[in-house]
Amino acid sequence: DQQVKQNSPSLSVQEGRISILNCDYTNSMFDYFLWYKKYPAEGPTFLISISSIKDKNEDGRFTVFLNKSAKHLSLHIVPSQPGDSAVYFCAASVGSNYKLTFGKGTLLTVNP
Amino acid sequence: NAGVTQTPKFRILKIGQSMTLQCTQDMNHNYMYWYRQDPGMGLKLIYYSVGAGITDKGEVPNGYNVSRSTTEDFPLRLELAAPSQTSVYFCASSLDGMNTEAFFGQGTRLTVV
Image 1 (tube, chains in turn green, purple):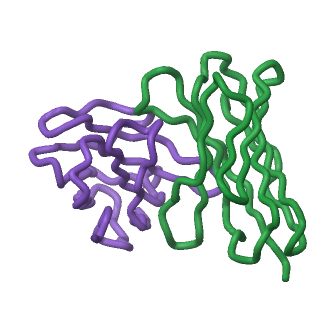
Image 2 (cartoon, chains in turn brown, yellow):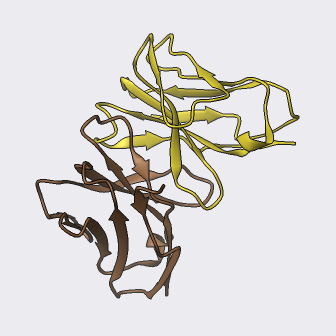
Image 3 (tube, chains in turn purple, cyan):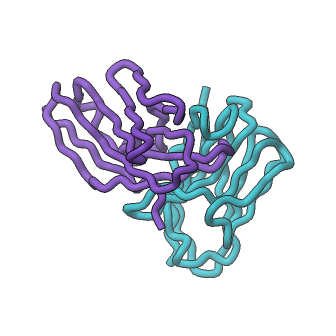
């Protein structure tokens, strides 16, 4: 039973355009959400996070939106750059902050 | 500053063999974790530690053991390797739990044949 779902295995966008990566969750107890980025043959790196008390968090080109009623969050990258090409994982936690549930990831390809 | 270092990067084991995956961090983080990532799947937590001498099971602990004798080191032991343990293993650390930024090692690709 997947509690965190990234239904798009891959996404391709043109450089300079917006990339929107989506994530749905089923556990209404999740109260903290994070996005990690992973390049091939490397470990994941932290990108951005959001608490359930917020509906938006921005960090430079990256913005995460949270819609609690829909149990949906999205990561917007504007403008997209070729260096953003990577697998993006959505992750969520419940209260205790050491057990993250990860989605399967979405492979983003940004074409020059 | 090396961050989180995992060794080895690659390993092939025969069924029934055992091995230890090494993980060390130089950031003085209290929290350390072991994850595995199977092909096309997200990361799953195997074991975690909130400080030296304290470890606990994650989501998929069967077939593994850990120890945390120092703040820096968090080795993962595989006893009696099975093909189901073929995966990529990631060690991570964080200052204050996974709701804060966690730093991951480069991973160990393990194949059990």
